[in-house]
Image 1 (cartoon, rainbow, N blue to C red):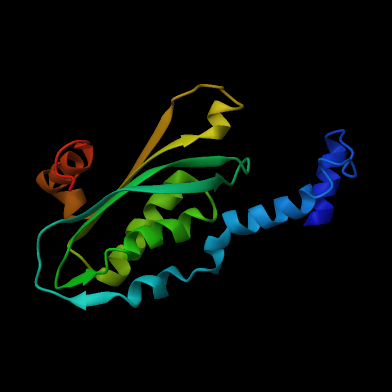
Image 2: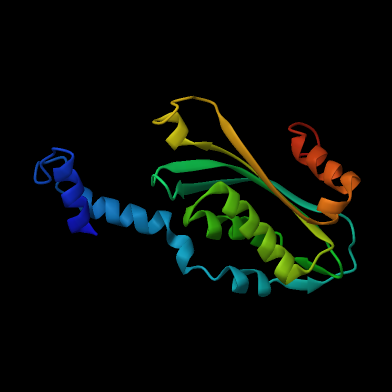
Length: 186
């Protein structure tokens, strides 16, 4: 990877041996390995190890989970917040596993649409709830720094399964809970 970065620097017209760039190939390699560390996480095992039998049958919401990812088209960051809800059906998952799941999938080369469905699908597969809702809102630096060059543009994606898809009241309860920016917080 270091040699590839040196080649890129040369292609940009830079001298990879100048003082400020000498360590750049190593730093880029280390950075990219961290930013794509989600490939080494088994998302299925992450969730499966934290399932509990529980009769709770009301909505569980984990909102405002910050995430950072790399756009697979440009290798430029996109970042924002993820909101996840599910309606248990005899099983619950440890709450900390939801942000860990978001992290595992976001630390891969991604498109926001796939990222959103991967989170919902994994929860559906392992927790087997009556439904899952995931909403992601993100700023894509590939739209801010290049391309259309527009600031403060957010992409919002959602994935709804089960009753979140079939029952508008359930979907609206979830959307109302994640839209409350004040109140409820302890």
